[in-house]
Image 1 (tube, helix red, strand yellow):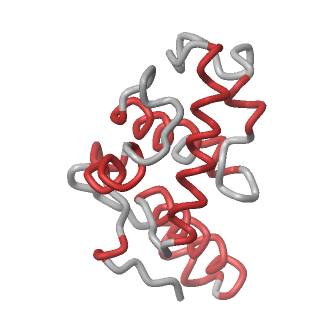
Image 2 (cartoon, one colour):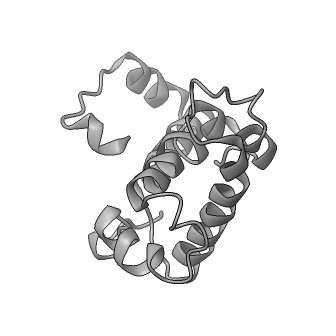
Length: 141
């Protein structure tokens, strides 16, 4: 079972301190908050990301404006490649440092629930009938 130690959590403060200021090629055109939000909202936090095998919105889905409309994601087409490169750097960093973010934790929970359907269908049925209430849900977006 994967551990989500709070001291290994990547949050915005840590992202800005450890990653955004270090060798970031796009930080002159894209703010740290915008980059952080795009990663959590589209690249790792969207339904399409959760549906993909590796839990990440595929490169082409993000970069091609026709696929992820300009009204949905307001990052200009000419910056999307750069943003995705920064995301790749972010992912490499959190893996190397054995860190996790909220999207990793949510994805892990979804996988555990799906696996329970195969392992213990009765337990899954009970979970399926349950309701989950999340306080401060905006902290996950």
